Each structure stands twice: as C-alpha cells, then as structure tokens.
Image (cartoon, rainbow over the protein chains, first blue to last red):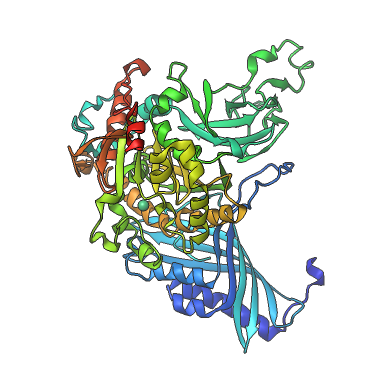
Length: 175
Length: 451
Ligand code: FES
Ligand SMILES: [Fe+2]
C-alpha cells in the first residue's frame, strides 16, 4: 500500500504506541524479560529470516523446504529462551553485558481492524561486552500491535537483519 | 618456518598457546593445511542446476563453485584475471556468465574468458583470450554429495584422504537411498577465535557439554543425552566412543541408535522414521552401523575444518580470517528420504539449538574467543594448554575402525587432531605426511556383525 493511502492512528493512540516501543526497548535493555513477555500477545509470532546476498537479476528458486529462520518463535519458545537466560547458568552473560536499543524511524498506520496497527521501525542495538568490545546490530522491524483492553500488545514482528554475517559471538538478544 | 616440534608435545597431550595467536604459525597453516588438504566446498544439493553457483572460501582464498552444463562441478578462484577484482559478490545463485565490475571482462560458467570490452579498438584484436580464463582449483572431487577442493596437485585422492573415515561418514551419507541434502540459507557467524578451537571443541570435547551448556540444558527439559547431567555432576561413559586415528579425522559416537534426536521437544515422528527405515539402514550398512550408529548422536570431523552432527543435524565449516578470527558457516542437513515435515522440523530445531541465535551455540562463542584472546599476551602465550584426559586409555574395538577411547567425555580425539596438525605443519610435501587408518576394519566388521 503506497504511503499516501495509509491512515494514521488518532494522535493520542499514536503517542501511546510510540511510547510503548521505547518502553519495550528499555525493558529489554534492562533484561526485564517477564515484563517484556507481558507486552506480547498470546498468539505472538517473532521471526528473523535467514537471507543470502543474491544478484538482482537472479531468479533462481529458493531451495525446497523453506529458507529457515534465525528466530521463528511463538510465545512458548520465547519463554524457553528466557528460561535459559534466567537460569543463572549462561556464563556468557555473567557478569552482565550492557545493551542499548535505539528505536527510530517509527511509522504507525491503521489496519482494517481498528484494534490493530501496523508499525515500522528501525532498531539499533549497541552491545558492550567484555573489556572494550563493542558490537552494533541493526535491524528493521515490521510489527503488528493489537490494543487489548487499552493495552497495546505485540502480535507479530518480522525482523530484517542487515548483517549477512552475524558479527557477534552470540545472539542472546531480542530485537 | 617455525619449528613446530616444540608446539605440540610428542605424546600429544600438551599444546603451546602460541599456536592460537602467532601470525607466523597461521601463515604456515594457510600453506601447509589449507593449501594442502581437501577442503569442503559445497553440497551437491546446493547447486543442482547448470549455472548454479556458490561462493565460498578455501583458507582465505575466495572460491566460486559452479555447476557445469554437463552436470560436473568446477571451482575457480573468485578473482578476475585482468586486474584482480573480486569477480562475484553474490553468495549464491544462478548465472549464465560472470561479468567483472571493473572493466567488464566476462567469463563463462566454465571459467573461459568470453568477452573483453573494446577487444578490437583497444586491444587491436591481439589478446589471446584462452590465456586469461579463471584460475581453477587444482582438484575437485565429490564423496556422496559432499564436494571438496584441493590446491595441491600431489595430494592423495579424496577417497584416500578420507580413508577409513568413509566407513563412518556413510552412516549419514549412505544410510538411505537418495542420499542427503543441506537446506536453508547459509548461517554465517563471525567469531573472534582461532580456527582450531571450534574444531577441537566439536571433535572431542564432550567435557564442556554439561557445564558450558548448563543453561540451555536446564531450559530444554526434555533433554536426555547419554547420561549427561546439568553442571557435569556425573556422566555415563558406557554410552559412547571417542574415535580417532583416521588420517586426522575423528568422531564422537553414541551407540544407542536414537539419541541423535533427543534434543527435539517432541520427537515421536522422528523416532517413527528411524524405526521404519532402520531395516534399510541395516541392509545398506550392516548391523554395527545400521543399529548402533544410524540415529545416534554423532560428531563427525573431516580434517581440517568440516564438522557435522547427525541427530542435531547441523553441518558446519570454519573459514579462517586471520589467527584470531573465523567465519563459521552452518546449514541444516537432512536425508532426502525424510518426509517434508521432518525436514522442516530439523531445519527449525537446528536453528533453535545451533543457529546464530541457537540455545546451545550461543554458549560456545565467548569461550572460544576467550581461549584465543588469552593466548595473545606475551607471557601467557608461552604457557601450555592440556588435553590429558584419559591419556593412554585407548585401543582397538572389533568392528570399528580407528583408535578408540571409551565415552564421549575424553580428550582422546583432540590429541589426534593436534598430532595431525603437527604432522602437516612439519611436512614439506604430501610424501612426508603419514597416512594411518588404525585398526582397519578388514574382517572385523563381519566378525562383529556375526557376534
Ligand atoms: S579487473 Fe576485471 S575486468 Fe579489469
Ligand atoms: Fe558446545
């Protein structure tokens, strides 16, 4: 849908949802995973597809059986990842590393059902790990958020990762 | 040339940390290991059609692997023969020709120079295009779907190079009609580690599992893996074997026929697949391998940098990028005989456990990086690291090639890996590299099968 035919949310809702995105980033930066899970709808789908660099003119079909996802998680699987991180046994996160998520380029549009919104954003994750190590992970996100009883919850997130090679020794992070 | 005699001890139980950090050692590895050994290029399933290409590395050399019109496979240095530009920047795809970005020289998929812009006006039609084809990798050969390349014309054939390891590779590559495939896109992760550390981690280090992966093992509660417990409180050594002494190749093997799939949250469908197809595996491989190994958790290592794990179904190659850096490339692997839904679950589970955000894989990177970094300090690099677990406790087993130590928690395989590393580093050419396939299976398999 071209941008000019899109309908934005009423300004108060737009503001509330924007705040939600920043709040979400702060919860993740603070490793407040239980609070983050509360922001997710029960039927959430959280995906980061694998990609490869192809020539623009290349029309060769992708191989059978789908391309695969770095993350293809429902709520139960996100909980599993969080159980691991909170087990106290993930040595790579102890002492804790710090992360700052910068959320930007936020666009919010209405969708047919007025209880949901389509949200585009960019997240830039700065990880500071071990001595002077700095890693930066940048991704675009296409989200669907749903308003449930006055609270916006994440229904789906498709992450477009800009690095063909993951430039960090782990991805113990959520985007 | 560095004298490598002092870097790995004769008994093979000690390595000097210098081997993980020294640029001179690394330079010699590029020549004597990556410039000499057969290196994994691509799985045939990844380039099925003529014109399909896949861009990879042999050591630090950028290599383009291309399916030919006649179905054969060629590999070329991915560099334009005019002024040296990188020829192909795509990871993979299908092409009819490769045109260079710089001045437009174009090469056919067979490597021949087919077009030179301004050939008449600027070269006066005096250029002999046959002299400027792409530079071919000296040897390319396949073993049951796995395509390898080698820069050394004098290397033994791929079949000789693999030696008795083929007997074990077949447990995965040849158990079912139709062979195997790699699926999904390449999963690339940069790790700040020396390339030898991930190899030894997977080839023999069952020791780290219960400790390094404790968080993941606790979260994935359904785990029941050959007697390992969270925190390495105990281990049952009876369930597995550490097998080495095969020209530098090795494997860890559990022998129960099903444990490969124990990390799956719900593995009923996969166990049914194993049950239904086991008679075929036994028919093709014999009872030892069909019953005990097919379906078991196996860690297979083809020296120097290819590893794959039937069961967890990841397939991985490590590309060195300097003494302290690698790119780790992984895929999911399947048997073509598997139904599509099992293939899909394998890809999904491989990514969940050992993908770039894998619950298990995410524990390893920092350990490997830290072992590398702790080898670079001037004083630190002069001390040793040790692989002395269960030293002197190996021997032959009827029916299984190789020198074998009991259990998958042992440093037996690492010792052989460093022994092989030293043999290559010390040898000036292939004639000086010893070939050994200890305890050749001749006769024994039938004996063991009968018993
Ligand atoms: S460098 Fe490739 S055409 Fe000149
Ligand atoms: Fe590991």
